[in-house]
Image (cartoon, rainbow, N blue to C red; front, side):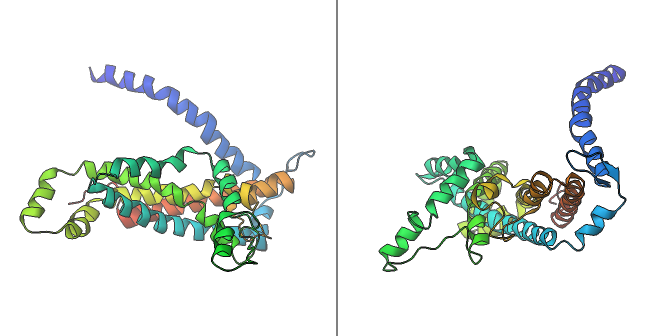
Length: 290
């Protein structure tokens, strides 16, 4: 019987393993291998050792993209989590508006990143954008801040475009809260605990695993964030909003340097692995709460 079960397990896993090997594992091997080459469209790839990796140490644009990526990872892993968990705790009370609020809050997450980028381009337009119009109504008649193209506001403006995506955190946290036994809340209320005390001392500690998971999702999503930056700033002004995915695109498709771009891709994967392992260790994801 056990041998038969193992056969079925193998048969069901085989398509997934093959797909993983052909699409992901093979791509990673090619990425790593070509990162040691001088490879441009129109020429053959030639081995150049660790030259691409040595270039990283003296490439100011690369380090700027690394700094922006890490800073956005930290911001998204904190601001998004605080917003998402806080909203989940508010919805937990199930006031009359909670279903409507949950639905509306989730709407931006079904819109493509490119569309969100275009939306914010309109809202922050220096001439006709709603934000500048509000400032003019408040008495600043000549106010025409170019939010996405000003060095002082570009990074902040791009960061603001990601705030709507905190709704995913809220949904995940609500699902985890739903798994908590009602007897836990009833016992706390019998002991005289207030709603705030229940949230702070009972609910939040029991959400350690899901909060850690949400931090993983929020932080690693920055390593894939390309569409909104491409639609709003293109990494500019200068390299002020350049992140690693955007710099890989620029290096490969604009500068036609695929070898160096793949070396940056390897660094990006290693950064993601470090972030995942660190977060898992800090939040002890998967460990028992007891």
